[in-house]
Image 1 (cartoon, rainbow, N blue to C red):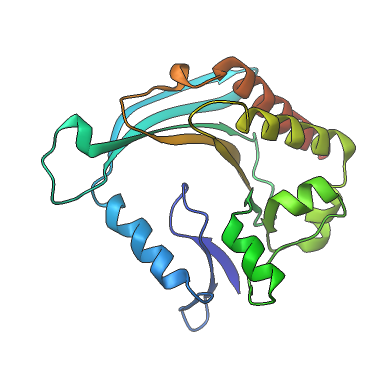
Image 2: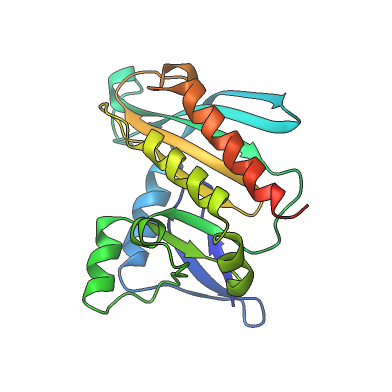
Length: 215
C-alpha cells in the first residue's frame, strides 16, 4: 500500500494499491474528499514566485477559491489563501507526510475509530499535535528523534499559532516543508501574513536541520 493525497493543500491521506489500483478511505473521508474537490475546481492561482535562499528553492503562491460556485465572480465571493514552500535539495525517500492533527482526528482516535496511520515518535508535544505518516516508519522515527529537528518543528509550530485572525498550518513532505494561511476574505500575499520573515526563517532552519541528519 502507498500513501497518497489528493493535493498539496489536502490533509486527507488515502491508501492506494498499485497492484489492483484500488483506493481505500477511512470512514467519513469520502465526504471530506468531496468537500475539498468541489471548491478546487474554482481555484485560481493569482501569483507565484520562485527564488533561491541559502541554496534552497523557495516558492510562494497566493490563490483564491470561490466559496459559492453559483455566486457572481466578485471579490467578496472568494476566499484567499497564501502558501510558501521550501524544498529539500534531495527527496528524503520516506513517503513522509506530517501535518497538524485536527480535532476530528483526536476524537476518532480517542474512541478507537481512527484507522489513519499515525507514527508515534516518543515526543509528547509532537505526538499530540501532528499526524505522521510514511512508508519507512523506522527511519521516520529515527529522523524525528533528532533534538534539533524537534526544536525547529516546535519553533515553526509556535509561528503558526501566533495571535491573529488566521492561524497557519504547515506540513512536511518528502521533498519540502510547506506553510499555508487562509481563508482570508480579502486579497493577500505572503508578505501580508503576521510574521513572514520569522516563518521563512523557521522553515529554512527546519529544512537545514533535516538535511544535517543525512550528511
